[in-house]
Length: 568
Image (cartoon, rainbow, N blue to C red; front, side):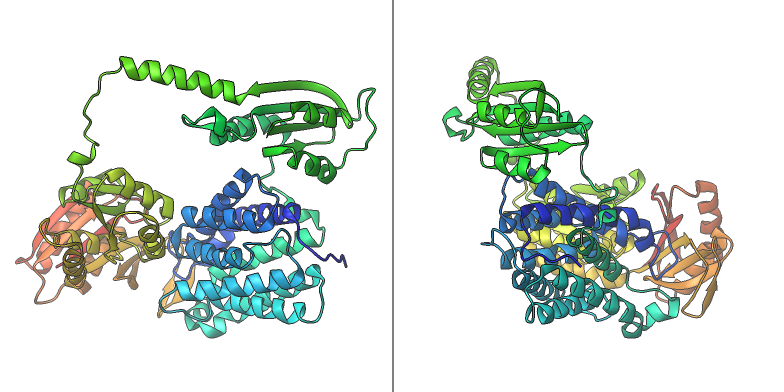
C-alpha cells in the first residue's frame, strides 16, 4: 500500500477531477436509486453538475495552496448547487474548506478534521436532519477518518478508512429508512458521496482507473481554455498599473526533441517551476506535446524552461498592460460618441418586489406571469436550477426585495443559499408543487411588507390539493402498489394514489380522490406528453363527477407530467 504524509495542490486537484468524473459516469445509476419509480430521479445529475461547478472554480484558481483551492471548490459548489443533494454536498465542502483555510498542504490529521468539520456543517444546514441519508454517510466516514488519524500519520490509510466507513454506512441506510428497504435501494445522496470518497481513495492509492473520463483537457483543447482563462483574468476595463503579471505567455513544446533538452519530462517538476513565475497557469500534455499558458513578468524564463524539455513548436507573448491601455482608449472614444438610451431594465422601472418562481414549459411560464410572477426560471423536476440561477434571476430583476416560489421541495435548499448570497432582502414561500405555487401567488399584495406577503402566501399553500400524473420508469412495489414499468400513476400531494395503464383514467381517478364536498375549482394543466383533446375528455369526466365544480383547462407544455391538476 502506498504511503504519503501530505496532500499537495496537485493531489487535491486530481482528487476533485476524479470525483467529478466518477459522479458524471455514475449519475444515471445514482438517479435510478430514486424511491418512487417516476422520471424525476435527479440526485446523481444534481450532484454531478454541482461538483462540475466546484471543479470549474478550482481550475480557475492559480493558487498552489490546498486551503485556497478548497475555498474555490466550496464557492463553486455553492453557486452551482442543484437540488438538496447538491446543496448538502456543497455544505460538506464548505465546512471542509473553512477547516483547512490556512493550510498549504494537508496532513492526515488535517484531512480527518476537515471531513469532521464538513459533516458538522452539513448537519447544521438541514433543519430536520434525517438518518439513513447522506448525513449518516458523511458522519460515519468522518468518525473513521479521525480514529485512523489518531493512531497514524499516513494519509492513504486515513482515506482508505474514510471510504470503507462511508460504504459501510451506505449499506445501513435501508435499515434506518424503512422506505429504502421497502423498495430495495440504498440512499441515493449517500451513494453519490461514497463515490466521491472512492474517487479520492483511488487517486491517493495511485489507481489510475479513477481518472478515466476525468475533466482533464488534452492539448488540442488548450486554445479554448486559454481564451477562457485570459478573458477571466483581464476582462473589463481595469487600470493597466493594477495588472500584477503583465505578459500573457503561451508555449508549445515537443517533448524530448531539440538540441537544448537536458531534462526528462515530469509533469509535477515542470508545473512547479512555472507556478512560481506567475498566475493563471494552465499546463496540459500528452506523450508528445506539452502546452503552457501563464501570466508572468518573465516570459523569457518560461521559454527557457520549456526548452529544457523539448524544442519550441509555438511561442506567443502578449503585453496585457498595452492591451488594456488600448481598450480604455477605445471605450472612452465610444462613450464620448454614444447617446444615453433609457432601458426597461433601469432600476427606476424595476419592480419593488421580484417574484421569482420555477416551472418548466412555455405554457406554465405564461400562467405564472399572468398570476404576477416577474421571473420564471425554467426548471423543476429533473431540471433543478442552481443557486447561481436563482441569484442571477434576483439580481437581474433590479428589485428592492424578492420572494422565491420554488414549486419543488428539492429546490428549497438552493433557494435558501441564494437568499444568503444576494444583497437585497429575500424570502422563500415553500411551495412543493406547481399547484401550490400558483395558489401562493394569489396571496401577494403589492402594498404589504415582505414578511406579510410571505406569511399570506404560505397560508395559501394549505388551501389547494395537488395532483400529478406521470409514468413509471421501472417495476417496483411500494405503498401497497404493484407497479409495472410504463404504468401511469396519480400522485396526490406527493404520494402515489392511483396506478393504471391509461393516462386519462389515471387523471380521472386521481381527481375523484381529490375532490370532496368543499371542493369548488378544478384546474387541469396538460403537458407536452398529452394533448388538448385528451384534456377535454378528462374535463368532461370531472364535470360528470360533480356538475357544480368549476373546471378550467390550460396548456402548460410541461415535461414529465402529462397532467398537473389542482383542486381548491
